[in-house]
Structure formats: structure tokens, C-alpha cells
Amino acid sequence: MIHPHMATMLSLITTDAAVPPDMLAGLLKTAVNHSFNRISIDGDTSTNDTVLLLANGASGVAIDDHDSAVAFGQALTAVCTELARLIVKDGEGATKFVEIVVSGAETAVAAHTVANTIATSPLVKTAFAGSDANWGRILAAAGRAGVPFDQYQTNLWIGAQHTDELQLVRQGTPTAYREADAAAVFAQAEFKIRLDLGCGEARETVWTCDLSHDYVAINADYRT
Image 1 (cartoon, rainbow, N blue to C red):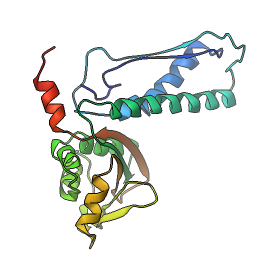
Image 2 (image 1 turned 180 degrees about the vertical axis):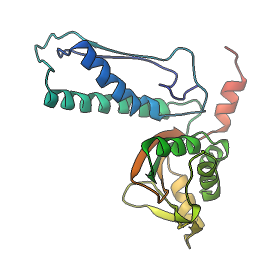
Image 3 (image 1 turned 120 degrees about the horizontal axis):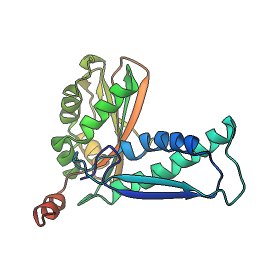
């Protein structure tokens, strides 16, 4: 049961900076939307999601102007992002950590919607588990996300690192990639999928994992 909003978690973050309550709340909301609300294990939400940010001001450092608020917000988002990524890596039965980036969308909402649909597709997630770089499942999930785009403008890359991307699809058509090379990427413990829709400038990222035999066994073996 890990899925936005905020996944299934109880998170407590503290700071000794002096931050006005209204500013603190706004900075936390922004940080959560770019971290905890960007992860999914199984698409199921929980009833008890909480994140708290407490500031006691003990350091005497005041966050009270634009520049200090931006710096504090960036640091807060970095902390929340690292915690969110760790939740995915510790997901039930998870063996692979997958970053899904959707770019070229008309809006950020559209990009997030497509990325989230890919991240929660059982067929995509089982392909992750089987090291099957099945680009058809990825594009099929994107196509049912409810976001209009031209499939013949789509481009799809995968990679274990940001610098070694392998293009699987160019303008809606599979490239002449080697299946063994694509399978080797999906066999890694961590890899990235990047889908460009070719219809805008918006870009969003979602972090997810595979759907393994262990996930089924864990959730079939107990009841809440």
C-alpha cells in the first residue's frame, strides 16, 4: 500500500532553523509533491499517511526572506526525495528500483499522469521483474493514461546510468537495438526509463519498482 498521496508512511523531519509556520507549511507541501507524491509500489493507497516538519529555531538562523526560503526549500526537497527513494528501495518484494521520466508533455500534470500510469501498470512492473525490456507494455500504459499525444512522435530510452541510454523507440517505431542489450539494462538493480511524448516542454519523474513473486507471497500470507 504505497502510492500517492504520500505513500504509506509516517515521516518526521526536524530542523533547528527559525521558520514562520505559514512558510514552513508551504515549503513542506512543495517538497512532498516532488518526493513522497512521486513514488509508487503497487498503486494502492493507505489510510494513515503523515509527514511532519518541526522547526524549533534553536540555531537562531532565520528563514525569513526569499533567498533563504529558496535555499531551505531546496534542502528540504532533497531530504524528502532521498527518503522517498529509500521507501521504494525497501518496497515489499522489490528487487529493482526504476526511475520513470516522462518529458515532452504539454503540462506537468500530463507528464506526471503518464509516468504514474506506467509506474502502476502490472504488466510493466512484471516485465521489470523478468528483465524484459518490453517497450510495447510501456507505450500501451502511456496510451491509456488519458493524456492525448501522437504515438508517432514518441521516443523511448532506457539506461542503467544517465550516460548510457539505449533508444528502443524512435518516432513510435522500434529501433534496431539488440534484445540482449535491452535485457541487460532491465537486469540491473537500478535503471531509468525515459519517454518523450513530443508535444510540449513539461517533464516529471516518478520512482517505482518491479512486481515480484515475493510481493505476491508477502501480501497473500497475511491480513490486516
